[in-house]
Image (cartoon, rainbow, N blue to C red; front, side):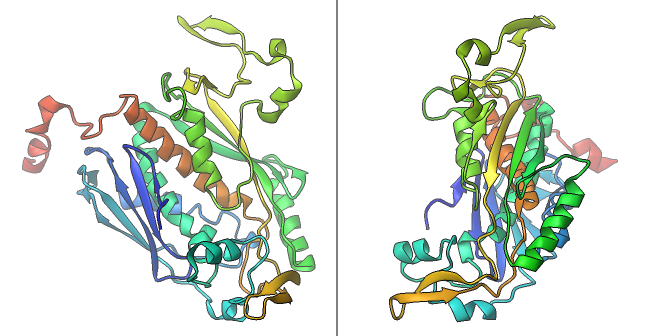
Length: 358
């Protein structure tokens, strides 16, 4: 299967299926000299399920760093991380293995590949993106070299506008409604990338925000991507949309940020801000109209497996991870971070010798 690698110089290749033994990633292009411990990766993996009330599948996410790190530091070779699947219930999917689930990739996978792993969505499952979270932990460590901060927040869930004050109450309400009506909901997420330098991205086919959009839209269940003012720009006049240029601290910047931090595909030193929509979880207990592929006749089906009442909060950490991976790749392409090692050349021969002697 082609299409499992993200990035150009900093490349992440993922592997594994939702109900397989393990899921993992290989990170190629991470420079040597980055401090990286198990805790850095575990802290990100622990964000996988921020609100257990919304999901019925909770994984331990036991993982192992197989290569690329020695004595808590990256060594410039590919970093391989394996994450075990320990909480699978594949038998429930046997009943619907010949009846594609509406809203899922069951039909398209069969049309493209013929042979299909019917267990829980297999490669199309959101579960497989846990490996991107692990890779994002590494990318975030690299981003710290430039003090780049990636944060996200939920703007909407299940049609409710949310903020820090009412988010928990909305989540509990949606979880209860999902149990009662056997249905699911979606949401909207905003991501901000702060302290980003100018000059990331190039015109045409390597625009920074276009690569961000490419990464975000590859996350299962994502249906939109908008930068800055987004679609609201279509309803504005240029005199209202254009961000006025000003001088601050001896540098030229913008007075506002309706462009979202990118012009001509290139960053100019202000925060990059974008939003995207998360669709409702397609697996539901309600009967849905489908087709039995054995008889090629209409059939009603419902999903008996576990599903999230709303998986918007789980997408947050994935979106941050994707943003970090794309950003590191562009930092390298722009020359802000070396591809081989962050240790200065004059120090490489003697690096670590004094520490080992003490």
